[in-house]
Structure formats: structure tokens, C-alpha cells
Image (cartoon, rainbow, N blue to C red; front, side):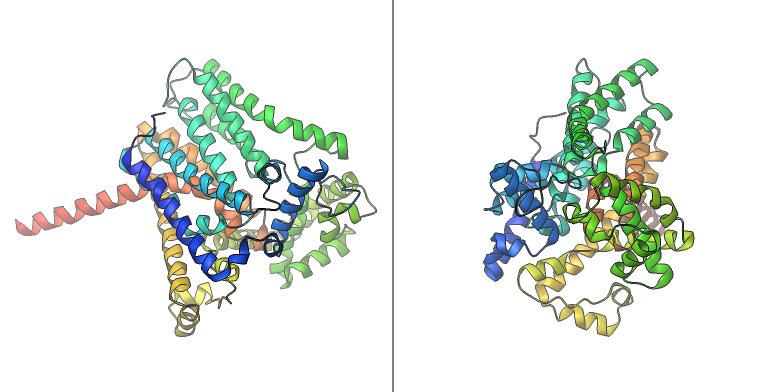
Length: 476
């Protein structure tokens, strides 16, 4: 990996910093109290993270309870709460927000180096800029949420892992480099469990695709180094859960998501219910603990192990109850998550009401929708349009980039690998069912930006060639 001396790459990082600085000034001018703990506790996830960090710092307990006995928590993974505890963010939230901004810049750098390992400097720069100017990431940086640090660690792990795994980087230290990449992927997984099965995806790509210069023994050794680095970080938390709850898993959140989000989405579509209504129907019909009980197991008469076991037994029945509605709700959730934005969150942060224009009406340019959008003020309306355009550009560019990379023999394995990771991450978005939103889709950004860098450059070149050929043919 080259030393960061590229001026364009430095500018990409500076653009990310500038975007975050402008948002910071805007928030301070409109609602400086946003940076107080009392304000941030209005969000349930932020409340959980702040409580966990505070309990780690003051009571050495990994618990979401606000009072004794501080029952241990089976749902959250430890790295983000630990960062809150170390940085003192449970009393000074700005410190974790600053860490989010650093992670944003790190993502830009990592994506540049990932793309540059196979493709041109221009493609790497475009990919990096797509991350730098993403307004959804920037707004998220001013929340106590784990997504920014997760995508930063994920991007760094891919930039370190993929070149030696796929043969783009050669040298005597590949095993050590891949081990470090596995550690970074483990850190990402301890931040959010989204990447838990990513080592399996990478192993399948390495062993099933042609084009790598590595023989079978070398492939096995490199994959083993990555898995070892990953396991060194992740397994201790699995052991902790096995010892404390007798549940040998990284987290129990997947069982509740399968039942109450994936299954809940199918119930929503099939029966025209709200999410809360769907959850109540599932709990009653299958004799399960309520969603509130699952989220707050210390208030239940059942143990964490019993709750998790009951959910896992019921999950296949709940999910497959309405197959057609399951597919429809999952696909609608994925599309909604990919195209959604969080400008409404920025409006709420600044103490303003967001008039939702409605995506479908806005796409059709209907006057009431345009009126509602503009009623939010020129800045918020402009950010909404800007964010939507960047998302559209990244999404279309990633689709073109996938085709371009797979069609090119020199970078085919790289393209297949990125596409496989993207498909895997899309499946994790579907774990939120019909209620998937912009937060669910943020982990997709590093991979989609990497693909879009190639896709957008290729599309522009093709358009230019067509334009020039038509011009000269006309002149002739």
C-alpha cells in the first residue's frame, strides 16, 4: 500500500472534514444543546450506547440498566460502548462525534487504496470522493451511533485484506498483512455484528474463482491467517456470552431481528399492520416473549437463553408464514433503505419540523410534494436533493462498475469479490424487514463507492467516445 502523498487523496479527506465542519457550525447555530447528553438520550439507540459506556466507566459493567443490579447485556457488541467509556463520551458526547468524523476521513483513504490496488488513480479518487461528499454519513457523524466507526473499520479491513488475498499485492509479508486485516475485520464486527459472516464470503470467493496467482496451499494459508486474526478478536466475546448467558453466540440480536423485523415485515404487508401491531400479533400467535421483553431481558421472568431459544425455534415458522409478503417486504425495505436519506434527522437535531414530501410523489414531480419539500427551507430542501443525487449516482455507478469489472479479465476476481460482499450486505439490510432505513444501508457505502468509482469513470469515457465519434462522423 502506497504512502499517502497523493494531493487528490488529501483533498478528498479535506472535503470530508469541510463538510463535517459546515454541518457542525449549522447545528451549533440552530441548536447548540444538541451536544448535551440530555438531548441525545431522546434516541433509544443513543440512550443504550451512552448507558453502556457510562456503566463500563463507572461500574465496570456491560449493562443497559440505569440502576443496580446492572444486569449484563446480550444484545450489543462491545467496541462502540467501550469507545464511549474510554473517550468519556457518556458525559461529553462530542468526543465520540469527533471519532466519527475521523472514521469518515479514514473511510475515504481506505477506499482510495482499495480501488487503486486494481484500477486507475482517477477511479480511486472518484470512489474516495463519493464517500467524502456523502451527506448521510456526515449527518450520522453527529449522532451517537456506531455506523461511522463500523464502515471506517470495514473499509480499512478490505483495503488491507483484499489485495493480498486476491493476488494484487505480492511480497513476503502477505501473511502478516492479512492477519492484521483479519483483526480490523474483527474490530468492525465487535462494533456492529453486520460483518460476522464476511470471512465466509471472502473464503468462498478466494476458493471458488479463477484468476488468482495463488495455489491452493497458499490460498488456504492466507484465508487461515485472515480467519485467525478475526477469531482472536471475536471469539472472546462469544465465550463471554456462553459463560454469562449459556448462549455461545456473538449476540442474540439476530434471533429477535428474524422474528420481529423480517417476520414482522411479512406480517405488516400481509395484514396491513403497523410494525408494533405485527410484533404483537406474532408474540400472541406463537406464544413468544414480547419485543419489549426481548429488548429488556432483565425485566423478564425468562432467562436470556430461554428467550433466545424460543425465538430461534419460532423464526422459520414466522418467516415462512407468508412467503410472498416476505419477499415483497424485504425487497421494499432494501429499496427504501438504499434511496432514503437522513436530512429529516438533521432538521430534528436543529429543532425544526420536517415536512416529508413523500418519495413516490417527489419522483413524479407532483406539485404538493415539491411544495412540502420547499417548505422545509432552501438549505434542508437543497440537502435533500443533493443527498438523493449522490445516492443515485453511487447506486447507478456501482451497477455499471460491477459489469465493467467482471467483464475485465484483469480485475474480474476483484469485481466478483466486491459484488459478493455487496450482495451479503444487502441481505443484512433485509434483516430489518420492511422497516429498513438509511442506517441499515450505510454499511453498503464503502463497497458501492468502490464499484461506482470504476462505473462512473467508464460511463463518462464511453459517453465521450460516442460524442467524439458522432462529431467527427458529422464533420466527415
